[in-house]
Length: 360
Image (tube, rainbow, N blue to C red; front, side):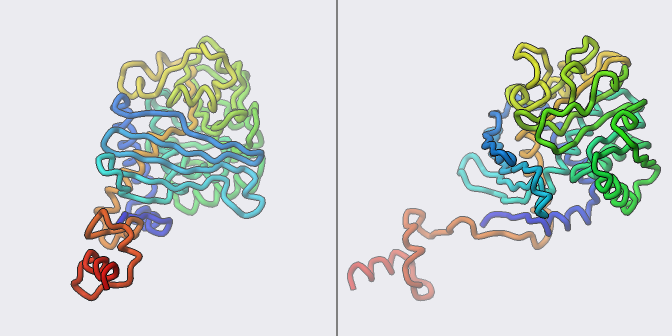
């Protein structure tokens, strides 16, 4: 039997814990795993691209546990009432190869992305940052707002999306959950939203090389969380921002970021820092107050590994967790075909039934 967490079960976990506490606890898990970066067998995700989007597999292992995530990204899905991103994942035991958990990761991916965003900002944004611009007010935006309010104490959130309905949706949802002390301000443009912001988080969905943030918008000391670019040909920042001498660029896993991140726009020898070096203290996230910092995130399998392990622990702590008969359970592990034989009398062994059929 394999533990299973579906959407309904995750809703129950979040109702019990609260989304903000879940994100904060998950952040701790992710940070701990990044600190043991060298223990992981890492690879860039395998991606299948099509005109409408991408389907990806994201594997990783620390030698004891193995995980993978199946995830898609299809921006046009919303026109037909479907989600842009859906995902599920598996956590398995390396010694036996047996899966331990099958879990939904659509909602969890939004939670872990927000956790990673806030974790990076903790290490890279100026201390005392209170104002954040949130560019892109779609499916990921509420989670980002919750994470930054909880973990960095953001008090003013400036909102912009090219679709006013998305901003209205975000405002409605945030007001419904009542984030105390968080001021929401809808803006008429990206430039208006980012002006004077300490942190700028971009979570747009269009699959194109967009110039959402341009050099004249960037002010000294600003931290840019670029989370929307996650496949070849999809970016959000003008490349001249990255070329500025006062800019520090941090990525999750460099081989993957070179293909899918903001730095796909730049030469292969452009210098970047991996986040594991920052969280371990080997490299600073920010050198001084006036430095502009960029976290060029495309999402990495380690974050899903952390989320799956965290979910598995929560599932085991909950009474009545669901399990699936995903794997056959055999008295004789060498007799798989015995599952297909007619039912034996109560108490009989499958081997006896096999002998009966062979020698009636």
